Image 1 (cartoon, protein in one colour):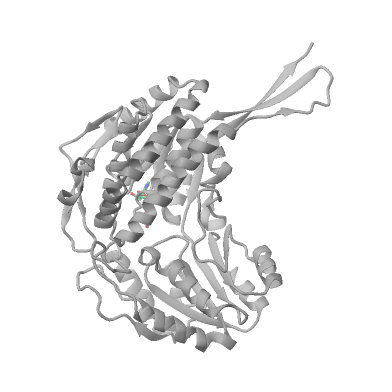
Image 2 (image 1 turned 90 degrees about the horizontal axis):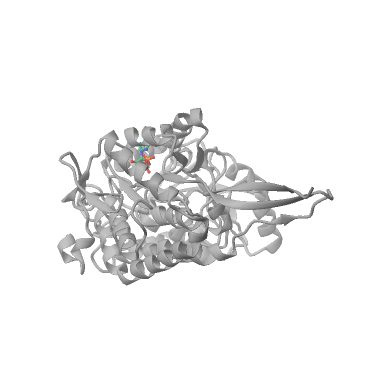
Amino acid sequence: NFAQLKQPDLIKQACYVNGQWLTTESRLDVFNPANGEQLGHIPCLNPPQVEQAIHSAQQAFNNNQESDWPQRCQQLLRWHQLIMEHKSDLAFIICLEQGKPLNEALAEIEYAASFVRWFADFRQFDHGETLASPLPNKQFQTQHAPLGVVAMITPWNFPAAMVLRKAAAALAAGCTLVIKASELTPFTANALVELAHQAGFPAGVINIVSGDAAQIGLQFCQHGAIKKLSFTGSTRVGKILMTQSAPQLQRLSLELGGNAPFIVFEDADLDAAVAGLIASKLRNNGQTCVASNRIYIAKAVASAFNEKLLARLSALSSGYGWQAGVDCGPLINQHAKTKLQQWIKESEALGAERVFEQVNIASAANFFPITVLNKVTDEMPVAQHELFGPVIALQTFTDETEAIQRANQTGAGLAAYCYSLNIHRCQRLSQQLQYAMIGINEGIISAAVSPFGGINESGFGREGSHLGLAEYQYVKSICYGLG
Ligand code: ADP
């Protein structure tokens, strides 16, 4: 438990408002998804307390000067340094509250921290422009201005990365923040905020609240001081937030669910394709929005691919994330498990065949065996839904046109993957797959330099890269009359 941390005082059972940790009588309990043990609790704030957090962010933004950005970048760099110094504690917190194995949790911290570093470094290169004027008596210029107070709502699957990808960009832009992390995994976010406190961000620049998610979401959407809401989570909740924020035309970034196709052509390196599938499918036990979901294998290589896949899967272990050598942790909760069981059952009734089920998994409630289904079709629930778990649903296809057409047949538009060693085919796929992120002969595709985000039902807005900074700015166009 948390007593094993090198610095147990990173655990804050509190909210952070105007530079201070505050607790309330009313609480939400937090549990370890691997063994059901209670890890602690967080406050359940009432609307006036959330209002205090928004107000303090507003005050801090009002105190902001345009020329403050070098100090803000120094604070970001200091924050990055502290996160890296405490990475083993932070990884342990993720492991306990979210369930992923320690090595994956450590990789998450490094990935998450890379955004803090990247935005701190990049800010100095961000600038407006002086435009070539077609008019003798006018000069035109643009400036990039921070939006103001930004609210962030983040999910449980990457408790550190989802917070830092947003927060680093918004802070570099000069915004101030009110964060609501997932109530399932609040302690990672709280520990990061404690390190931000130590890094010297002024009071009010970063605030973190917890409580009734729907009520806080509504309060964010209706609050005139909040100029932008950045959300990562389900498409269902993304649509609720967009509807709620419409009356005040709040700016939004929505990073929602995916349903990624993973296509293996007959000219692929099959060993690389198997490794890429395992990486993209089983990272975080399948609980990522970019996880491969509909897996299309060229008929000519289907049996060879399956054989290699099953051989690799049999070597994987599932268990408590804090134990050495564990490849897969638990699912986040019972609901995630019953959903998967139901979709598998319905798909089997339609003709899917279970060809692999992992043995030797931990017996605790939220564990789920890696399961491979063959003879899947696009109409089956396991292809229609974003599975968010270790279920590998294999389909076959005959030619490239068919593969592309079927891969594009979904409302989602986040990630897609394909494996082929034919350069022309790879180029065609990069153009014809209607997805916002494409992995070509690669299963792990995200980095701070590269825009992350979706189209269609996967939402809009980008995180990382210069586009990630622009999400928290507005462009001012200035016209100087020259007389
Ligand atoms: P997931 O299915 O990945 O848990 P959710 O969309 O339910 O995704 O949750 C993502 C985040 O959205 C969490 O922080 C959760 O507390 C929050 N959330 C859930 N329901 C609402 C809502 N009605 N309004 C605002 N936020 C919500």
